[in-house]
Length: 240
Image 1 (cartoon, rainbow, N blue to C red):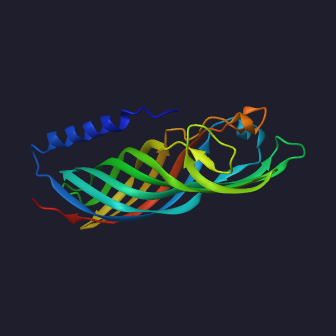
Image 2: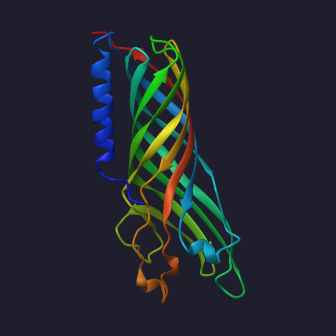
Image 3: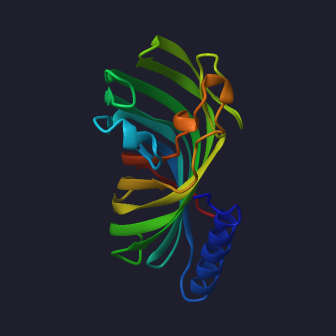
């Protein structure tokens, strides 16, 4: 499934309209500050690959995120854009039953992204304090990374890079842009904002199959980013 390119823009327009309408009855507040977080990410595969590798299991890989978090609120509604450096990736271990005899396989991928989420929160108090529930889209831009793959051909290490077609050169290739939805719960106490977020990638990150790898497109996989994130931000009020 490919995320429609206008989804992010449409949400920005919706959020702006919501705040503009609310501003008639309440005064807007704006705050900005650093944000750090811990991530647990994986790939969700949707392909015939695992019809053969029936004993393979995709696991979560820990990482971190850091950047800037903003908060623009009117009453109970708050728009929360951010710009983050975030580590994504996954672990995969198992047995590839496509071959006879079955062959052990493993994969470790660390992909680094510039992530730009834009969520809208409904807060417990009109001051923006207390509990909040939020949701919204995000845009991810691949910056690079590294990967390690072990299969019947041996152990291969390489970089994570963007391309439209796979290349049989030891690197792990992915689409440059990711996109999807985020949702979760948060709590703000004075300047501190803590959030627990689930990230659902909707843009398939696979690249086209490289026929030089063999006679079958068995190697073609379709996968999507998935992640849990726990973050803490310190927001300083910016008064007009």
